[in-house]
Length: 436
Image 1 (cartoon, rainbow, N blue to C red):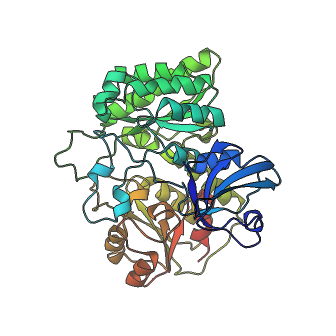
Image 2: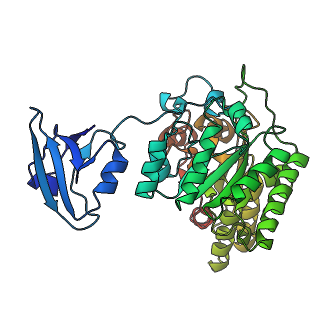
Image 3: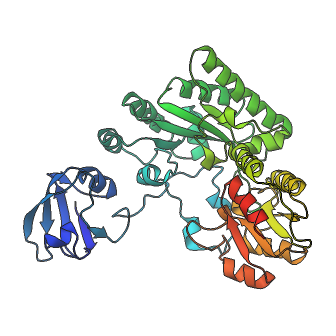
């Protein structure tokens, strides 16, 4: 196995050693290099011996001395140095299977790559991993690993994920835990399938792996209006959502009684569905699963109100106005915060627009899945302010493009207003509200 070098910056360590684009990196200190994990792990040493194969097939040894952790300047065609590992499951709740036609191709790719879990926090199922893959994680002490568990019942996991390896791969959780690898886990809950007694069982089994299991997130299944031909699923009722919260609270109370820290949390969507108040930030500890929508509402509100308290009172020019756009779920929160700001600052005018999701259907209410087209449709019928604030999570990572490929520039031109993406930071939202 080897990886091909695509570029070497002039003046870099590798460049000075006459390594060139087109060369193949075979080994580092005798270890085969197959992908980014091997490369990053074995590159850390201060004394390196690289085995390089030239395009003509000749090999040579390159010895390098460098500071520990210093990069040597090799570039590769792709970040992972090989193809991204795709998902082999056919989960009954898979969101990708529920996408409408006509979106960009990358949205239909299902990844299940342990390397992306380590570098970017992606969640993996362990179903396409081998004993050798697990041994490599343990040897390199890659931690934490984020795992989509869904259920600790092997037979039920096979049924839910439609993969015969789904049940047996659960044993890897114990192997990783025994080796001291930290685990963040998630349970996508489907009403009447893996909640109730099954949720009790999953929590109990994951609890046995604490403290290696440092967090468990329970999130409700996301359902779009594009489920034709898929497994019949439904959304949670308020009563069922409340039951999930109570089950998790009971589990955490048992952990406290045994001298352990709470590790399980219900996503904000469960509290919203149940009509219950979102807990205070103290409830969530270090917010281990914000990316799963666990505690995001609580932290966002706390950041906003703290920033609001620190701002001196002042008056604004009459007639100035800012418009905030958000999804159905966050509308009550953003409205609450806008009212708090307007109460403190004279003449501040902030209007909050609630956008219904037509691209995925009314049952999808999170701000991160708003399309540019749905925002435009709502904005066109509104009395907009001098600028429009949108949730940055609605944009593709590190781009200015929505899920439907509309760009920020196109949206701004259509509504004749500047459009400002606001990150999941309550203090930043306040800043944009009052800087008009």
